[in-house]
Length: 416
Ligand code: HAM
Image (cartoon, rainbow, N blue to C red; front, side, top):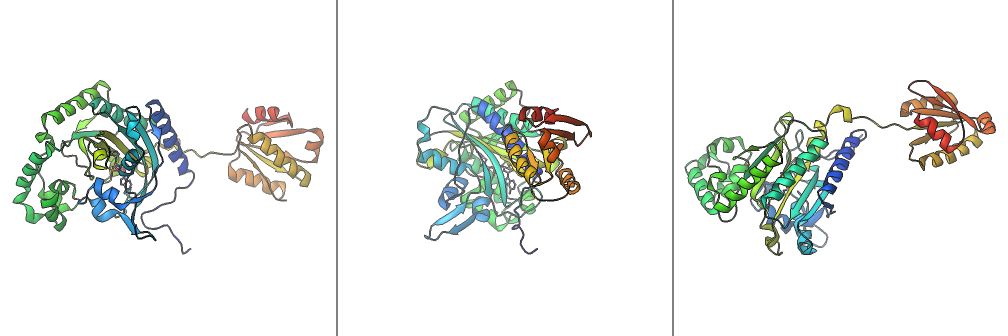
């Protein structure tokens, strides 16, 4: 076979897809009770949207975007994340005029040209949520609590909720200074990218994955020590409300997000079962982004869950396959037509029905039913049609129940 998926991409096949659907259903149900509405955004956007929001010196923008020129010569990018597209839509459609808080969720593929490894893909799926218009840390706590409810509801256990505050434009200059003072004398130990970022955006040095850079920045001052009064109060509020809502969490002053748009609250949910790619979800506040995109000053906060990282953590008990409720084995051409009709009538009642389409022998039909894992089988022959009676055979127990060919009677026998 010559053709294969591209490196870092994967096909999601049954029965694994059942887990994906399970997570999506749980998420939708939980979003509903918190008032989040679905929003579907394009996968392609203008490249500037991501440069402007994620940041020119971020790894995503510098190294990981799938960017190309379309036939009209415009620079287009496959979205590497959902927040930038969401904020573009929020401003474009004046969603800020709706009653606050405005709450939205999305599900879909994102694209980053990263080095593929376990749990790190070039196309990956996120379930994201964004809540707009409220600055109060009660909203932050509620959003993190909702995230916990989704992850727990999906069957995940032993997760760490790590939180921090990364300040705002008022506290950042003092922090940048402190960081630069710390890094200055060690600069030779950093990679070329970090040396360049030192002048433009030293905060990005904290996010570099190069082992020498990780070692060289050890002991750097945490931003949490440089928060202004407002950010400090906001962070205290968040901790208080999380405690009130009984969301177990730890404070991680060294938590760094790879995207530039964050202000104040930042968080990551990690699992030790995943090795180096341990973040199963992450998010934070971005109070300046709407304004940056030409909208009114409107605060925002959100998160995104990485599907490929939570699917492997779901308990095996959920990995059950689904099987047909009934397989119909017709014996001749007349019975075959009857089977076609009968199947449609039973499906109208929500049952999964399979039939045999060709002229194969009864023995081979029974084998097909077995391979599909059909729970019940009926044989439709001349005699059955004449008497309008069939035998429903339970394939697991071998029990047989005789019943008339009447939809309600058949359903009763199949469900029994
Ligand atoms: P992020 O931290 O870049 O944040 O991604 C969120 C999650 O997506 C990660 O925690 C991880 O589970 C998953 N993820 C990221 N990259 C990959 C990859 N290459 N392969 C598999 N999974 C991956 C954001 O994207 C922000 N937009 C979240 C947000 C929403 N902040 C505010 N609102």
